[in-house]
Image 1 (cartoon, helix red, strand yellow):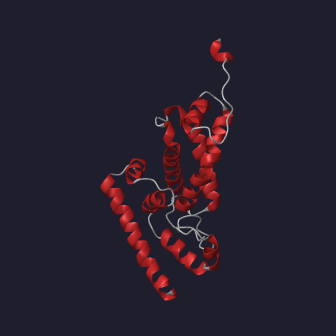
Image 2 (spheres, rainbow, N blue to C red):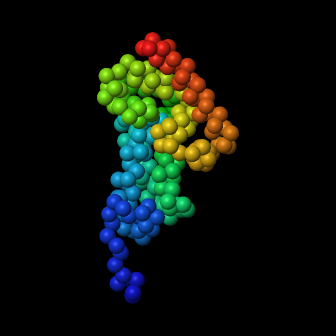
Length: 197
């Protein structure tokens, strides 16, 4: 009876992730909505970079959060929600690619790459569309697994150990795959960057 009378603190942007997870597990939809709002853009960006298709990324983002809602009771590290969501997104993305039975990358070279290019100046990226298209094509030439590992590291800043857990790889394999991805991108971009200097 006392538990029923106890009032929960109102939710606000400073509510810790652990509290949001606990309240969402208790069925409080506003808490899950706040978790969604905090992480939807990162999940969608990751899926866009892996799937290379905006519509597929939107669909996969929805699927990720539907699964996350049902798997919430199994989340062990409540403070690691972003990494957990990206792990679910990774599985959704690879299932989506397998379902398409098609490893041919979609021709979306005109679409801007959203956050993989580490540049604080988006206006400069807008002015240099050709370089952007070249980078997008180079990123698209990576295998989906290698691209996912690279995006998790560069775009989402996850440590190698966390990427290893999400990808189901050993730590040396993660480091090797990300190193190879960087070398391949550098090799692909060197003629274009060199031509502009």
